[in-house]
Image (tube, rainbow, N blue to C red):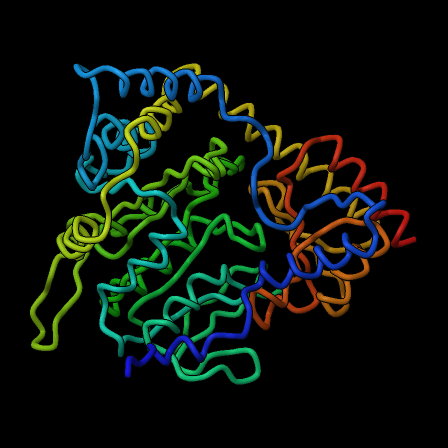
Length: 407
C-alpha cells in the first residue's frame, strides 16, 4: 500500500485563485449576457515587446538549421543571458553580483516554492501576512508546519502587515531562520525603504538566517529612494537570495522566464555545525531537477537589455502603471484608503468590510473581478487587491461600473 505525504492534507481545501475561478465561472454561466472584466489575477494582457518577438523569431530560425541548432543547454542558463542580467540589473546599480551566481528558470513562483527544499524541516519560518500563497503552502507541503487553525498554520511566525505599519512588517521579537520578504509587495503593492531593508539584513546577519527576497515587481519602482534589489544593502550578499521575473517586466507570463540570484557567501549549517554554501546546494538541486529554459526564450529575454528592449519594456511598464494610477485615484475618490499603484501594479484597497463579500458585490453588480484579501492571510481581511494588468479600455469601463455599483 503506497502512502501519501500527509502534509498535503494540512493544506486548505482549495487554492485562492481556484476559488475565484469557480465563483466567476458560476456567475458567467448564470449571466452569459454580462461580460466580465478581470482585474484579479496578475496576468498581463499586452503583447511581448517587439525586440523580444524579433529575437524569438531569429532564435527559432536558428533551431531550424543544423549548424545553429541547440539541444540541451546549461541548466543554469546560457552565459549570454546570465551576463546581461549581471551587468544591467546589478552592476548598473552598484551591486556586486557575478554571472555564475544567477540561475535562469521558468518562473519565480517555481523557484520560491523549490528553494525551501534545501533547508531542514525543523527550521523556524518567518512569513508576512498577507502573503503570496506559495511561500506558506510549499512549507506546509514540506512538513515545516502544524495544522491550520483559525486561518494560520502553527510553526510559522507571521509578520503582520497592516494599515498601522504601512503594510511593511516589523522584525520578529524572536529568532527566525528562513525569512520571506516581497517588495514591491504582492498583494499590497507596498514598498520597503532602504532603512527598513537594512534592518532586515542586520537581523539576518545577527541570527545567521537567510532572507528569500521576492523582487518580481522591481521594474515598477518609480521612487528613486526605494531600492530595486536587496543587494543594494551592505551585507546582503551574505544572507539574501533574490528572485526576479520577466513575467511582469516584459509580459513573459506565457513564455516563462525568470532568474534567482544565490550569492556564494550565503551559508547554511548542518547538524554538526559545519557551514555549507547555499549556492552549491542550489546548483546541485537545479541540475538534478531542471533541464533549463528553452534557447529561443532565453534569447527573447536577453533582448530586454538592448536599447530597443529597454525602451519597449519601459513603455509597457509605464502603460500598466498608468492603469494603476487610474484605479487608485478612482478608488480613493470613492472614499477608500489605498496603497500600491505608484511603485507597483497592484492597488490594495481597504474596504472596511468582509473581503469575499466585497468581491461578490463587484462581481454581481459591476461584473468586475478583484482578489479578496482574506485569500492572502488573516491580515488581508477587509481588503481587496485590484490588478492594473488589463487594457486601458477595460480598466476605464471597470472603474465606471464600480463607481455605479458603489454609489
